[in-house]
Image (cartoon, rainbow, N blue to C red; front, side, top):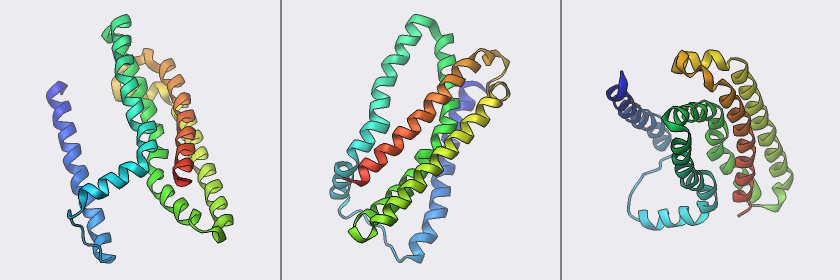
Length: 193
């Protein structure tokens, strides 16, 4: 549906995400007798940013800062068509790279809780190894399956005009697997403080 369909889809997805999050979080808050308030919101934001800045900087901010000028360079040297191919490859890789990002909040919580006491050193090492193996397996499996069906995925999502992005998407998927492993390492550093 072109640009209007894209904008409507993005707004609709955002609204559905808010509603879905509310429906998931409300029963949990009620069951745990947690009351949300905004009394000390700026102090909490400051402490969260202070604690998580290396993670946010490495995983989100740095990629955004470096990515925009590089996309501009691709557009300038290769044109809009090449930039479109790059964006298709990036979005295909994002389908796989969401796995470590989705697991990260729970993993950081569990790993932090077991790292807090010396008596849990064995449990902490076991959880860390289990997390590393599970995410590595999921990344390897999803990357391999995506690469096998890549021509069909691109044709289904973007149409036959983007068939040329198969090789670029293949390379981007395997780079994304490496990035997922690095993302896990950043989580381990964050847990260690």
